[in-house]
Length: 195
Figure 1: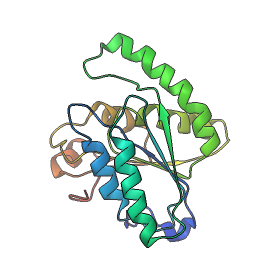
Figure 2: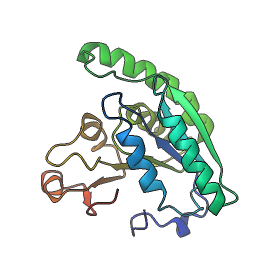
Figure 3: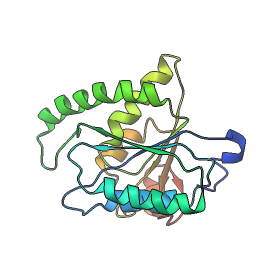
């Protein structure tokens, strides 16, 4: 994220929440994308707090491997792993999704309060919605304001993901990787392909 929108040098050390999720059907595409994005960040973005769905079996190994390699470069590398209930399963009905998402928000709120991140970086998984809503609530209550950066997945060429459609209105920075999306969503920032 070496972009004028987010200057790590002006923020000092940045506590970062990364919301990731592996979809059983996509073979950890969101995790791979977010780790590619994180590989560009300086050591100022520490500690990194990874949050993923409790049913996600693949992301933890990928994150641990990524962080192990990162520790070889940055000796002060710090990270945590946390799980939350999945807000929505693939093909889950919309009505029951409301209940599971509310449950996930309630579960995320104390975790977000404990971590009090400066920045939340997410890229499309449903897990990011409860985490971002929890952070927004903490900001509204005057407890801690977090910057929310949403990066829409590279595979979203013409339309936003469901998470993107929700967080478009709440994120501080909404980054798309295709010019057609920038035209449809004027608040977004088009940086080209970044993952």
